[in-house]
Amino acid sequence: MEQILIIDDDVDMCLLLEKLLVRHGYHVIPMHCGHSALTFLDHTQPDLVICDLRLGDTDGITVLKKVKEKNAAVPFIIITAYDDIHMSISAIKCGAFEYITKPILPEEILLIVQNALRKDNGSNNYSTTRNLTTDVKHFFGNTEYFKNINTQINLVAPTDYNVVLYGETGCGKKVLAYEIHKRSRRSKMPFVAVTSDDLCGSTGNGEGFPGDRLNFFETANGGTVLLHNITALSQDMQDALFRIIQKKRLKKAGSGEEVDLDVRIVISSTDFLWNAMLTGAVNENLFSCLNDFSIELLPLRSRKDDIVLFANHFLRQAVKEMEKEVVGFAPEVENVFKNYVWPGNLRELKNVINKALLLTSGEVVNIDSLPPEVRKHGYYMNLAR
Image (cartoon, rainbow, N blue to C red; front, side, top):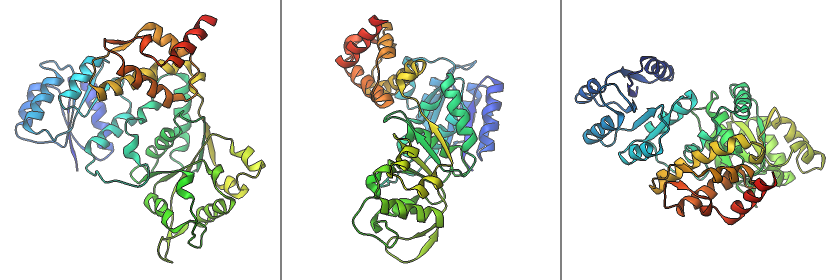
C-alpha cells in the first residue's frame, strides 16, 4: 500500500484529504506541523508528500527543498489558497510535481496523486491517459456550464452506458470522455482513443477489421474506448464494429482464438449521428447500440464566462513549460478574448496563449503579443458593442 504524508495546519482540510485518499486505498499519515513533519521525514520515506504552502511554523517551499535534498525522487504536491503564478513557478523549479489551488476538487487531487505515483513510463500506439493529465483540469470550474456538464458526467459515469459526445473540433470532447472514464468503475483499466484512420485498412481478419488494427480493443479490454469520427468509416467497417460490440467477443489478431470483450464505447462526433443515420452515413444498428446517452459540448464563443478561466489555466501551463515569470493578462487582452469567435475553440485558445507568451517580455501579456487575427477581430467586435 502506497504511503502518503499530508502536512497541513488546517485540521479540517487534512482530515478531508485523509478520508478521500484512504477511501481509494492509500495509507495516509496526517501531520499539522512543518517541523514535526521534517523530523518524521528524517526516519521515514513516504511515496508521496502533499503539503500546504503556508504552515504555522514554516512554509511548503522550505519543506519541499528539504525533502528534495534527502530524496529527489519523492513526488511533492503543494496546495494553497493563493493562486500566485510567481509562487507556482518557484515551486515547480524547486521540484514540486504539481501546485494546486483551493478549493480542492476530489477528482482533481485523485488524478494528480495517481499520476505522481505512476511508475510506468511505457509507450502505446494509441492515445492513452498519460496524454491527458494536464488537460483534465479543463472541465473544472464554477460556471453554470461546468455544473451542468458535471451533473451529466455524474449521472452516466457509474453506468455501463455507451455515450456519444457532440461538439465542434477543439472543444474538449476527448477530455470529457476521459472524465467519464475516470469516474466509472473502469477507472483503473485502460482508456484508449482511436481515430477512424486507426480502423481503416485493406486486409481483414474475418470480422471486417484489419488484423493489425485490432490491438486497441485488446489493449482497452475492461476499460473505455473513445472512437473519433465514425461517420468516416465504410459501411462494412461499421457492420463489423457493430457485430463485435453486440457479440462482446473478439478474435485476437494473428489467431482464430476468441476472447470475451468488455469495453465501454464513447463516440466523439462533430455531426449529429441521428442526421448521419438518416442520410445513410451511419449504420442504423450501430447507432442504436451506441446511442445510450449523449452530451453536447458548446463552442467556446457560447461560453464567454469560461474564456478567461481557460486562458488563465493555459497561461499557468505555458509559464511552467517556458519558465517565464508572467503573472497574467492586460485588461484589454481579456476583452479581446471575450469578443473573439474562437473557431478552433480550446485548442486555438491554448495555441494563441503559447504564441503570445513567446512574445511577452514583461510580467503581463499585452495586446501586441496576440496574433493579428485575434487582436483585430476581438478589438473590432468590442467596438461594435
